[in-house]
Image (cartoon, rainbow, N blue to C red; front, side, top):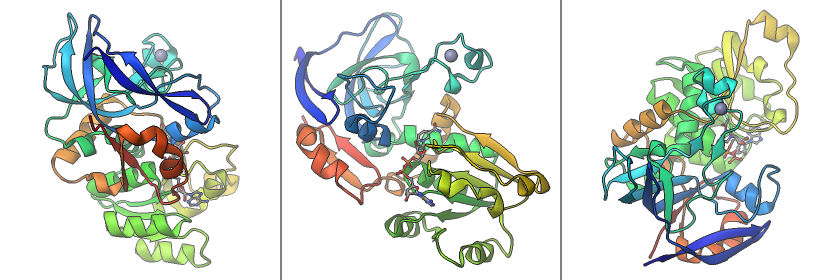
Length: 342
Ligand SMILES: NC(=O)c1ccc[n+]([C@@H]2O[C@H](COP(=O)([O-])OP(=O)(O)OC[C@H]3O[C@@H](n4cnc5c(N)ncnc54)[C@H](O)[C@@H]3O)[C@@H](O)[C@H]2O)c1
Ligand SMILES: [Zn+2]
């Protein structure tokens, strides 16, 4: 086969099937055959046209599990037939962040499937330096290593260790990943979300307590979970300033707040509480190879399972037709994985 089926966002709200040439890997690249792909909130925003940095036409897909089918010259470290996950970030290696070793914060970062064409197609060329070997992880879970790695990065930034009282605000894919990884670290984890459906998912699939921050007795319920105390670490995964303006009030002395949610609007930090409690405030951006490795190992050991984040499956062959009715209009979608039926 020299051509391949490719799903292109031609313009906002318009997905079309296109036939493209199957690529040939250049030096340092692998040609990968996509097996599964996760659908991210970014994909949905790109479809809707409300992602300012997006340009069209674009092939989405940055949460990928694939098989190596061909290797370009000098593409070392992988073999044909090997199962891999994509680390989609390409950093410039020159900016201040990259020079400080924080390539996840690169000022000129290019994300495969966001700033350049990704994997909602049958085959993709990628630098081998962007691959992670995942032979010990099933394709369904391997497609979720990237969102779980973003969560793992936030957990690592917060320094969450066994026995700590951790409140995760927001039970979308990122918050669920944070809660699952913090619990795998041995922390005592409570999740807060205004959505009853998402709280039920936390109870059922993570076996953790989930509270509604809009409830009158929220603070009392939180204290009850944490042996009469407030949280030591709060991780925000909502992206809602309304959810987090009072985060410092949820903390006890010497606590840490990590914002992984990207807030559409400024945050308000209650000054007196912030000083009085000597609160630490941190951001968390993307993930590093270390975070991807940690997630792969947790998945291989059975401590992280796809179902903790995943609740829908889609077929690649009908995705253009299904995207609006089943992805966009599905109020109960948390995370979907696409199967590449050929
Ligand atoms: N830092 C990074 O590198 C990075 C990477 C990916 C995503 N993100 C951000 O992380 C955030 C979460 O992503 P997601 O895909 O899980 O999103 P999502 O929209 O699926 O989940 C957000 C959750 O927050 C809940 N929520 C909203 N307002 C709330 C409130 N006031 N109180 C409690 N819960 C509330 C919602 O019910 C929902 O369950 C987004 O802001 C996203 O942009 C950051
Ligand atoms: Zn850089």
